[in-house]
Length: 245
Image 1 (cartoon, rainbow, N blue to C red):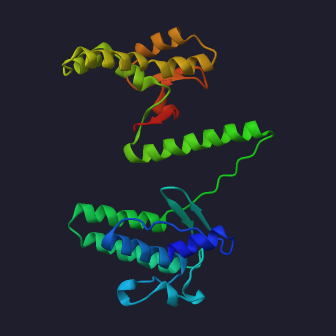
Image 2 (cartoon, rainbow, N blue to C red; image 1 turned 90 degrees about the horizontal axis):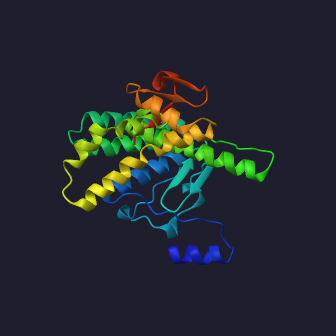
Image 3 (spheres, rainbow, N blue to C red; image 1 turned 120 degrees about the vertical axis):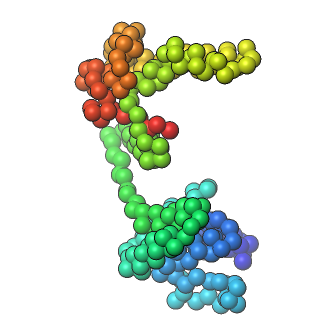
């Protein structure tokens, strides 16, 4: 069936895209059932004697948009199956309560997140193509930072935490666990590089990197340089943060 699909695509007969099913075994079946539910389609199950050859248009589903990448696909629902999706989420939440396995609970939670997760469209505009591309990079960077922050939380930003970790007591603590000279040399290079972000931030703001670094070094943890306001302050309170990951 896949070869026929590819052939029809190449000949321009069908405008289609094939997506590899996620996961394996019973979990794959469950996720495919979730997708069928969210799109209003019927799950074609070969174990029940169902085949693609017998599928009719009434068994197909619909959605607003599908974005397919190499390793993932995002299906944006058109909203027609909202009630069914809500009922499935409630069913899965009950299933989590009845499941003792932390692994199974995690996987069920992933299904809930996939079913209930919203998708936002960010439209980027600009006067020139260069400006648009620059904004796209900024938005992409910001989204990656938010995803990382959701996983492990946030820390004071502005390069202050990395500079804090370059203090002698941290360097000495790490070196104690290193055995070879190569390891120690590598660690030394890493520690020296920890001051690079705050130097570059100061340089970009038109300030003296050495002065900024010296001042922040003498501040307690959490305090740093806010390049936007040119003020040394509690960066968490000021909203200047980085993902901990």
